[in-house]
Structures are given as structure tokens and as C-alpha cells.
Length: 205
Image (tube, rainbow, N blue to C red; front, top):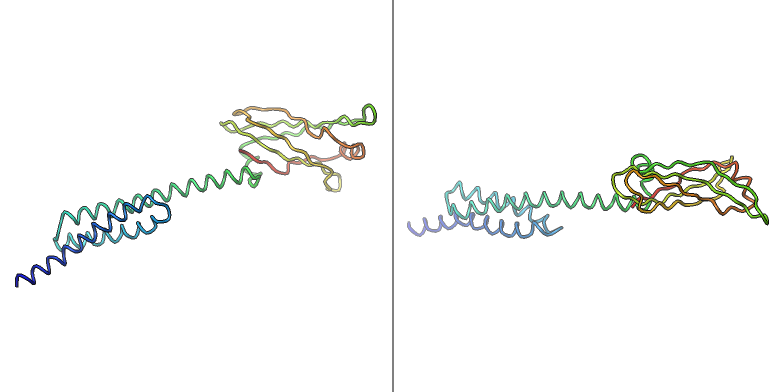
């Protein structure tokens, strides 16, 4: 009779021990990326085993410790995964901004690009004296650098030429003028004088 009672007590306390062990493993793995996916399930199992042990009133101390560790491993796993996901999203957005993949979004909220009137004429020795002034305004509250590709297209929509504005370390809400298309061939001068200028791509970093 005593042996049966002893075996039953050991089986009951086994749930508490399992809960404690799973909770410890879960809490250790919860701080490790990828591996903390397992810690979530270990934490759930630890909570379940701990509750069973408490219901059976066996090894209360171990059961409570396992319950706490199981809950902590689940909470830590979820919070860290959420934090890592946000960080990865930010890195992805920064890479897209630097690669020019978010041009419309950047033009909408981060930078204003004002394109002036193209000026060009034939100078001495048949050389072209030309420029197109572009005003760039950083609309953010931080120092930002922008690379802006601008194209010149003719009346048929065909591209004549492209040039770039490099606005480096532009202060918050700061504006700066840049002259582009300063090297235009005499053959393209007339077409450039009648061209339409568009922003093709904007990179921000």
C-alpha cells in the first residue's frame, strides 16, 4: 500500500519536475533568434504540466517555479520576436529607400524637389553654356542625404538625357539649389530647350 502511494506521489511530482525543466530550457532558448520558436512551445508545455501538478497537489514549489518560467519564456519569446520583426522591417525600409524603391513615398513625405527652367545657349567656340536649377528641401526632422535622378524627355516622350542631384547631409527642413545638365551637346541643345523634366528616382539615406 505504501509502495503504491509512493509511486503515485512520484508520478504526480513528475509533472512538476517536467514543468520546471521545460521552463528552464524555454527561458534559456527564448533569447536566441530562431531557436526561440521552440521556447514558445516549451513554455506552453511547462505551463500545462505545472497546472496539472498544482491540481494534483504535488511538488507545489517546483510546479509554481515551472509555471512562472513557462509564462516568462512565452512572454519573452513573443516580445523579442515582435521587436526583431520591427527592426528587420526598418532595415528593409532603409534599404528600399537607399535603393530608390520608395520614390513616391519619399517624394510624398520626406523631400520636396522643385525643378526650375532649363537655360542653354551656344557660347564661344560652339560650346554649350547650360544649366537646370533644382531646389531640394529636406522635409524631415533629421539630417538626410538624397540622390535624385532627373530625366529630360522630348515632346514625343523619348528620353534625351538624364542627370543626378546629389544632396548630401541636408539639414532638417533645409533647402539647397543644385545645377544639373551643365554638360549638354550642341546637337541636343534645341531639344533640351523644349524638353520636359521629370523626377525618375529618389534615394534617401
